[in-house]
Length: 304
Image 1 (cartoon, helix red, strand yellow):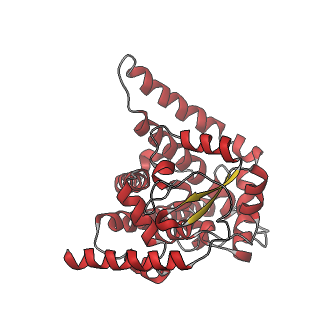
Image 2 (spheres, one colour; image 1 turned 45 degrees about the horizontal axis):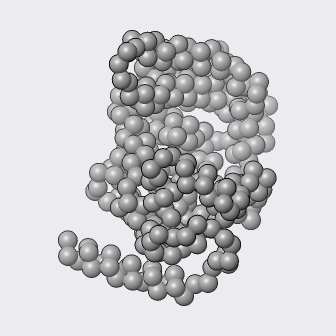
Image 3 (cartoon, rainbow, N blue to C red; image 1 turned 90 degrees about the vertical axis):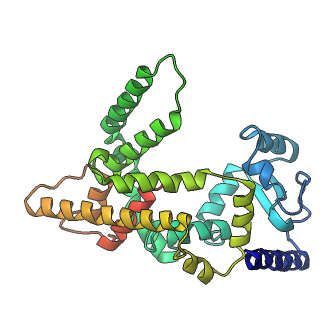
C-alpha cells in the first residue's frame, strides 16, 4: 500500500513538472476560472449539482468555443458549434484524444469501426452506412413499437409508486438493439452476457472525484501499459474482459446461425448483421467486410 501511494505521489509530481513545462496553444482563449489545479473544471463538468447547468452558463458567458481546465492544469477546448464539430469529427486532422483512445483500447474489439482509422475505417463505414439510412431504420419500426409497448406496460403496472426508470430503459434499449442489429431476441441471450453488459455500462456511469483523477492519470501512461493493465486481476478489468469476450462469442453464434439458415435457403435482410453479411447477395461489394470484422462490431452495437 505504501509503495503504491509513493508511486502515485512521484507520478503526480512528474505530471506537474511536464505540465508546467508545456506551453498550451489555447491558453489565451477565454473560459471559466479553475477552482482547483488538481481537478481543474472537471468536477464542475462531470459532477455538477444540476446536469448541464455549468455548460449552459459557460456557453452564455464565453460562446460556442471556450477553454476549460482539466486535471493537473491541462488546457482543454470545449466546442459546441455544430459546424465546427462536424468538421472535427470527419477530418483526418483530428485523431481521437487520449481519453477516447484509452476507452476504445480497453472496451472495444480491435477490428471494430471505432478502433480503426484511415482507409480501413473508411471501408468499414462505407459497408455500415447502408444499414442506418432512413429506409433501413424504418424497417425496424415494428421492433421499436413492440419494445415501447412492453416498457409502457411496466410503467402502468407501477402507476402511483416511485419507479427507477434506468433499469427499464436499459433493458428496453438492449432488447431493441439486439433485435434490430443482430436479429436476436434478448430473451434468447446468455444470462451472463446480459449481466456483464449491465455491469460494464455501470462502470461508465459511476463517476467520482477519484475516478476522474484516475482517468486523468491513465491517459498520460504509455498505451502499452494500458493494454497490459487489462489483464490485471481487478474487479473492473475482469468485468471489461468478460463483457468483451461474451460479446464476441455472441457475435460468432449469431453469424453461424445466419450462415446455416442461408445454406438451407432462408435468407433475409431484416437486421444490420443480415445487411453486413450480404448472404443473399451473390455479387459482394468491394467494401464488404470480413466475418471477423462483423463479429467485432457486436460490442459497438450492444455496449453503448
